[in-house]
Image (cartoon, rainbow, N blue to C red):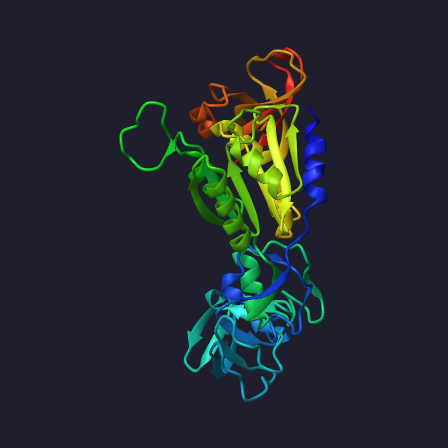
Length: 401
């Protein structure tokens, strides 16, 4: 057996970030930025008001109170999108709407709630300082600064900023298209009653969902029978259409593990027995430039193997700097028993955060075939070789949600 870290290193040594591509801004969410974004203009581009109210000279409001207001003639109204065609003179006010540019000569805004109409004048009922409710030019983004750096994961907020800077396209790292196939004569699709020896294929749809959740592009390569010719056609077809491939099943040491036979013939693949439980058998290699991850067929083993090997590697291919799941230290609220076998166990747990920190407890059955507990779990407790964890011990937990 080899250590988990060595198996992960073998994968990472053979992977690289995908090519850059220019995409429309509306399609950029979830991609990783490939080039630095420098602001070519200031945001906002002009000083404007943060409130509906009146543009004034602050000096003209000195001493104003509710009982002794300052009365100023209203000489104009400025709507959002409009520009004043004159300079505000001392002793004047202009009605102004939120977002409208401040007129020349003014240096403050009195919110409408601190005024009252008085014919063609306005009574200002409070003294305001210079800059009151004024958004200066460049208050959000000054011109010429680095706004976003390469490696930034683009969210709707980033898209809004880019749109405000006039960007219609942005250069990102391509998001990997990841093909998934399940293998095995015992697997069936659909709702028909199962015949003796048959089980329904859960891994393929599960892995496709995990790929989508990880921000990647899933591609269904279907269910492939235990036949070397069929497997080779499916794999080569996947290589033509995908940036990476994940197979499920057929990677153990049995006589009918056809995936192993086909991949061994097609390329240089590493067949690993990793010192972990579940997900001990794992295969990895590159075929015509396309990385292929061979995951075990037991559902929990397949899911854990995806989390430990495929997910972080595939996210690095799309430029993600946060490729790995977050980890926390938690207090185990119950004993997590195991036997000594030379492996690190990844036990499915329910982790919860409180004001006192994190706690974790078992999510249920820990067998590699018991998918219900895996679905319930939101974390994997990293339990080192030995007899297990006692209640009250500190454990490391990989957060899945």
